[in-house]
Image (cartoon, rainbow, N blue to C red; front, top):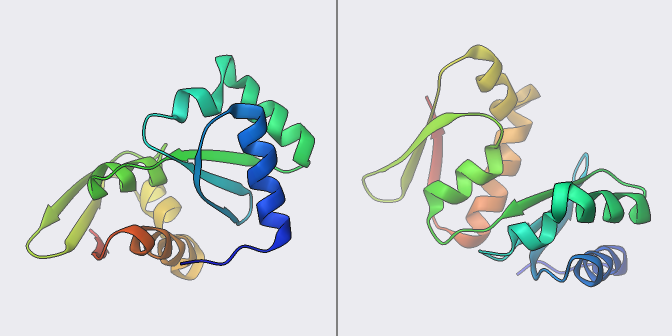
Length: 134
């Protein structure tokens, strides 16, 4: 279980009061990332992205909203959005991300595989799986 500092707790409180959506997790990367409970994404984003824009303006940070899903494959798809890849589970606890273009690979892997490490960290909070990129 992650411990939050007062800054992150403040971000979560602002987000939840503006959007009325329940936050499952929040972390600060290049942008502020909120993982909302399954089924809450519409509420979190708002009409034409109004809630995201309002939260972004209030916090003066770029905001990204991701919907949690109990299915690991769908959750990973939500995390790597807008990159399209084939995501499938094989064997015991191994999830493969198959990407078509080099641009998609670069986006998912990141410089020195930084993005992939962050993806694995987030997924491993909720699921005990190994992630491999093809």
